[in-house]
Image (cartoon, rainbow, N blue to C red; front, top):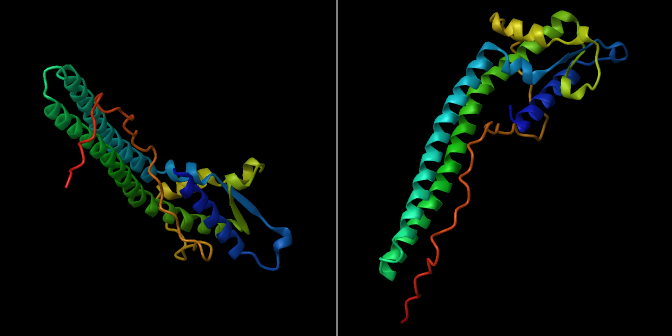
Length: 216
C-alpha cells in the first residue's frame, strides 16, 4: 500500500476515534489495528494485489521490449555510421532520440494507469474496512481504535486486526456512517505500488549534431 494511502487511513482512524470520545475519556478502552495488513490480507485485498501485479508485469514487459528495441536500433545506427551520408545519419539519429522521448512518456502513462487502477481496487476495500472498524469499536465497547503505526506498544489482546479480517471476509456489514477525512485535507490519490521501472537513460548515437539553423 502506498505511503500517502497509509497516512490517510491513519488520519481516518484517528478522526473516527476522536469523534467517539465524550466525557468518559479518562477511562478509555483502546483497540489497535494493523490497517495495512488488514486491508491487504482480506480476500478482496489479495485479489486486488494479484490484479495489480498482473497489470504491472504486463506493462513492465512492454517497457523492457521497447527499450531493447531502441538499444538494438542505436547499435545498428552506429554500425552504419561509416556508410551513411551525414544527412541520413542525422535523420536516423534524430528519429532515435524522438523514439526515446516517446518511451519515457509511455512510462509516465503506464504509472498513471497503475495509480488509477490501484485507487479503483482499494478504495472500496478500505471504505468497507473503516465501517467494520466502527462496528467492532461499538460492539466491543472501544472508545478509541488506533492504527498500529500510531501505537509503538500495545498488549496483544488489544489487537483487533485478525477480527477485522475475519469479519470482512465473512461479508460483515459495516457501520453506514462513513468516517470523513480531517477538515481542509483532501483524500490523497494512492500511488501505484510497485511502479513500473523507468527506462534507463540512454545516450543518443555519437556525433548526432543538431540540424543547422535556417538562415534568412
